Length: 194
Image (cartoon, rainbow, N blue to C red; front, side, top):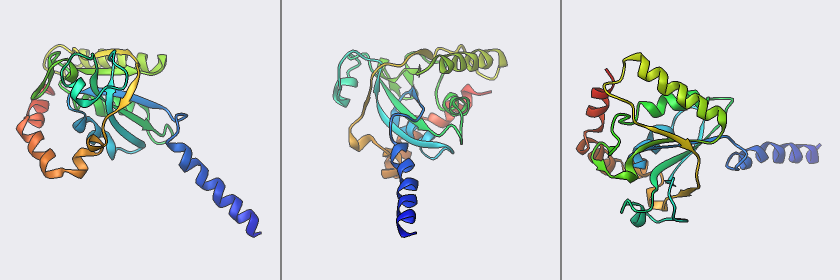
């Protein structure tokens, strides 16, 4: 009986270990400074992890200093791994769209440059179709002030950012709050969404 109990305990622990594995579905979103995008997903129901990083560029394993020059082609992005039994890609898109200035092709809030553009990197054809459909639905809805310029393109290599960027808003709440207020992020989001 004790051997069965131990085997059962180990079996119960195995899924937790595989949760971080690559077999879980994920999405990649970019929308300005990754601290804010990561924060939006960190505590969302069904999200297993939200990792800040870089995607869309031509340099392998870039550093923050390289990406911030705007010359690597990368954007600051967040890889969101999720449990499809608890949330859907459509729900993640709903969170994403309400966190970005989807009308600004030059950057986000107080962060300007190509490395801060808003992009959705689709991982599967289904994600592409859903992202494009939600974009069309938003455009038709009249809820957004301005033309939607967020790019939707195929996933490219994702490189996790340096450790000090991970969970930045939770680890540095005062600094992050000053940044968010200083960038007038919430004020601009309210203006974008009628």
